[in-house]
Length: 143
Image (tube, rainbow, N blue to C red; front, side, top):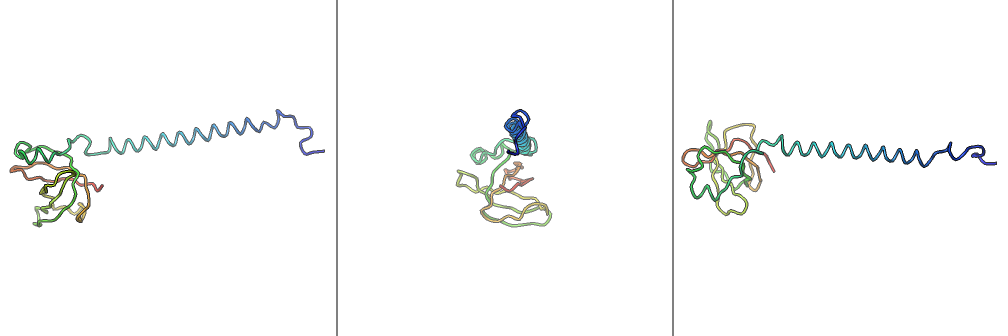
């Protein structure tokens, strides 16, 4: 006599219930993957304040900075140095860009919410070309 005497094969249903549980588990995992993927896409596109800005071209800037006056761009900047600070005005910083050996001076506003810059750090910034070709940064996001 065994513990399974009198139990028919249809009553046990082990393989079909296991299959249903696996399909349900796979469905939950797939749904979580879609939700996480959607959140990442949302963060990289809709919540990106730089998404509508053209990439800054150092080549165009050095050719004719006055032609760019008033325009806003996004730029990926690497900190090279600090040229000085004036209260109420801000810091004059020196940055470099990928594949361009020239340094770019950028006026960073006197704002307590901005990061503390260290040489070698890379930031994505929103910059505006001011009169005389001076670049003025209005926002920084550390890369």
